[in-house]
Image (tube, rainbow, N blue to C red):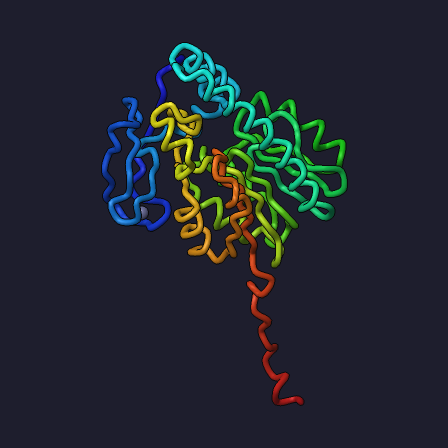
Length: 280
Ligand SMILES: [Zn+2]
């Protein structure tokens, strides 16, 4: 693999303050896992540049490398089999949820990969940072009237007008995004009032992370750059204006958070046109 270009993240994405401490037990050089000194949010303090995510570190390649590494290193094979079962089960639940939430209008899937999980009905749009996967997905989206952009999500989303989408799917995406605040702010503007984001991301506070430690399946370096908990994701979302609903709070052993973020229906206040009061 070519040398990976990277940069430091100067501030915490949740509380926007500087100052973080390395979490030594989870850090594999040169990708420091750090915890914010102010709010405790855990993230990678150094991340790969977007250009490298496009080809060198594309998800499909990264996933294959990580699988190989785990095969060699994992001494708890039985736990791993259980984890795989849970992940499969999680996919079934995800599909059911997506069917319910996105039935008409326009739906954006950020990090769509090589296909779409958007059920028949709405016009599907996608943004995918892997060049190969975006090319594979594009004809599928175009056949249904939408399209796929190959570009970082933070700039790709700016191609769309404000209040354009009924819902946005971020499944296994936000943990990869070095600027989660930027993407959630831009997504907020492009959702219709009352529109929703359906989001799935590893839960750093899951029971499995406490049990498995550094071998927890949520750790992928340098692929996963944010380690959200229900608390930190709620704080980030609410600071932007979303209503936060944690959908799988009862699933104690789920490795992932499944969350709905809603742009309030009243997000755009009705402004009284000048002169109406005098005319009445
Ligand atoms: Zn913080």
